[in-house]
Length: 120
Image 1 (tube, rainbow, N blue to C red):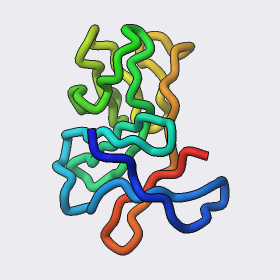
Image 2: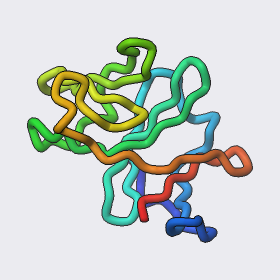
Image 3: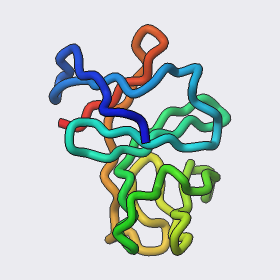
Image 4: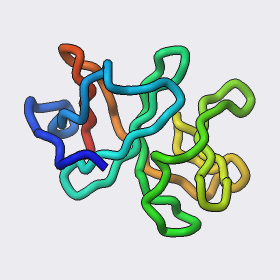
C-alpha cells in the first residue's frame, strides 16, 4: 500500500487526494492507496479507463481488492477478488453474481499527470 496520499483542491463532493503518477500505473494491475481513512483500490484498464473502488473484499473482510484479477464480463470492466474469486464491476462496484453485494466506488481523475481520488 502506498503512504497516505496528499490532499489538495476542493472537488464538487469533497476533496481530491493525490494517489500516484498516472505513469506509475500498469494496465490491468491494481494499486492500493490510503485516502483519508479509506483503503482504495485503483485500476487502469488496457483501454485507458481509470477506476477506484473500496479495497475491502466484502466476502472475506480482507483488504485485497487491489490484488484482484482484472478483466471484463459482458463488456464491462471487472475485478475478481483474489480471496474467493467473486467478480465486481469496476463501474458500479456491484458483485456480478450477487448484485445486492456492492463495493464502494469513488470518483477518480487525472490532473496534471497525477491520479486523484475523492472519497467524500
